[in-house]
Image (cartoon, rainbow, N blue to C red; front, top):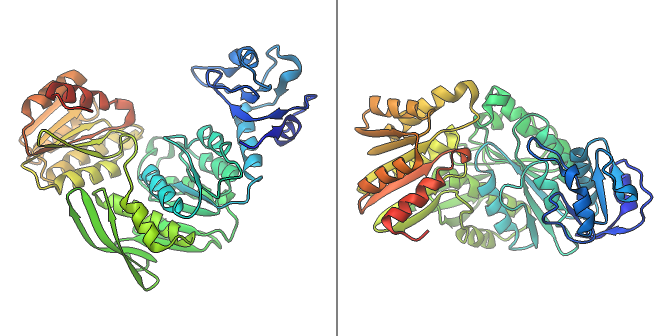
Length: 454
């Protein structure tokens, strides 16, 4: 982080201070702070950073930013809302740097698109990206504080659960290029309709200049017909001939996908070490971003070819003759359909799906879980195991549609032991559930039973 004066910080957040010193980092966790930092006391449902301001000063914090007095005297900077102050300070800090920023949002595929895009842009520019799931109103501003004079670009994922969150993130990051991956039904519980989800995602425009370009999924009818003002729009897709970046000649083999990307009268052969139509869309968005940012197409293709899935996102592992697809980071109706399509397309003896509950679907939950059961049958799944009370509906519909072996569980260990007892060489098994279901615990037990290294 570039050093900031306390006086400039106070001005950026609309506060007063008599301090006159420099701050070398920003921290919201007193356990991780470094001497010379600004400690921002955030509060949530289960924590209150104001209780740790004294400890922060003892560990060497230069000042503390608070919503109320905590006995820290002159080293205390008071604001009405520390969450809002964090965003305002990050916005001020971002404006100290002249560099392109790519903002990415959407219902499904944000993180994979971010990782692919960062890999592509890194071929030409030293690139900052938000790590893991630091894509919210705390994680994104803290990511921006990692900027320094050595960076030449930034790729930032923007997540949300309701209205005005993407607007806040966009106004903070001021993207010079915006990407929207798709509009699904995640967060239906709060937003109520896909049209409202589109409205929330389109808030990314609020922090962008009027002439800043957009990369949008042209195969998503809602996005394709969305109002984009004066922004220059390039579409990517597979089906829509109006797309500037279009994939065709698609072949999947040996856990990889080969395809041609046609754009501006040019063709570029591309290979990604991942399977599934959804990953082609992610790669198309990253490819388009690279071209718009002046990265040579051969370098873009090379970066995509070297992409490695992060975290628990569709990690494919082969052991004991069994193909394991670990996809436990999150789940929505769209991503479950995509994952089942991947499993259904594998040339294996038996296809086994382990599906856990999808959360935050509101009134759509029953229908969505039922449709997952139908989708499993349509993709030729041989064995379906479900985990959680909502997924019982998935199991019921799967039985109704012809899957003979279906079992439902509410205990992870029982599920893991049953799965371990039926797995055979030449099987493929998919694990897919919302992050809150912790289905990775089941995977660990299975690996332990089968004596497979994680």
